[in-house]
Picture 1 (cartoon, helix red, strand yellow):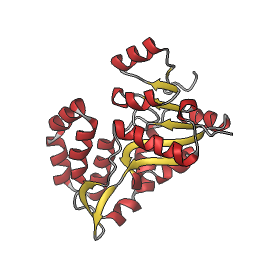
Picture 2 (tube, helix red, strand yellow):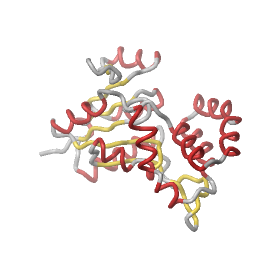
Picture 3 (cartoon, one colour):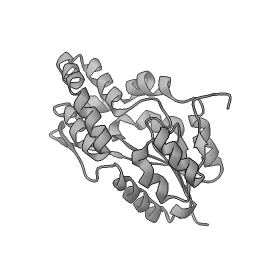
Picture 4 (tube, helix red, strand yellow):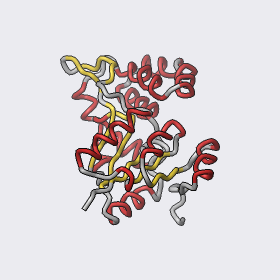
Length: 221
């Protein structure tokens, strides 16, 4: 039987969080007020990159991690989950993933977040596979560079196709979920796309193409 995969974006789709809030949590945990100040001062630049290109945003943003130790970052994963991810999970997100697993889909978290931050969250949802960004470390210290491939925009699709090939899965029978217009290539790549909490532009695209529009925020829906 041909396998089917279900791909889930993370931020804004399954959880009300983003890579900036995750990094801010790390530097507060570290007690680095200089890093927090630098992040705050960079907010207009980050917004500009976000509007221009998600890929460019990631290249710029992950430079903030330069100088942080890998072992320290990895040791914070449980705290990050308990203090950032768990309180901000959408009430129906775990039910969505469980329902897809029950229908025989292999579940895949595909996100621009960093791999070392995701272990407890992956365990919570029971994801079968993870596609995420990875920092480059030298002698255990982050350089601020992202190890290729950088997971954003069309590279998400390339990574999805590679995993489908590895798993002998039919992407035309697979699902994808996202809240972001920047993930339109990800949604278009599968046969069964759905949008979650979309903005106005993505909602128009979904309505025009007849894609499901989901709300995972309300526990009673």
